[in-house]
Length: 257
Image (tube, one colour):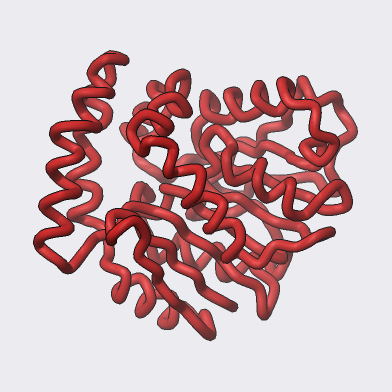
């Protein structure tokens, strides 16, 4: 998305309205359409497929981001907003949160969730349609960044991390939560068995079996934890550490600019 524009400070329009910044989507249209299709049942499926564990992983990801009261933070590939809402609670009413995603349907779900909850701090969230490969923000702008289940799905992982590096303030961190590409055959076998025998069958109950069958190939094509650390350091991050979660099924990269 070239030359996306975002007006700051945040707009004072009502919470029932959310602003989109438009531009060219460089992520594949197929992936964009996929996430638009699953948007209506995305949250329910996450709960069912992870047995609620995704809520723990996401809280850990936000904690690792280092976001604190009053910070200006970004949630890249925000989806329906889980990490954005957690970040909002972390930075408080004095902070600001931008949830960015390339799917209008996901952002619509996030905005609807925002309207349904009366927490005062949630007023500090702004939803922006944008591209993780071409972030519409100035250099050194954010105090922390999160990305949940997004890096694996972008077409250029290096560029996505480079963009996050660019908009992060020096000394600030990005926390990237995603499926882990394990180097252990046993862990990989369990992961693929769960996708075939739990994830896809459950998704099929929502008419979304085809949409979730991509998971196995996307994990196979993803980077291992060590490769993610190496990539982050090559880009210019001063420190990078990848943590395996839930026996290596999930992983979280923490990188400091």
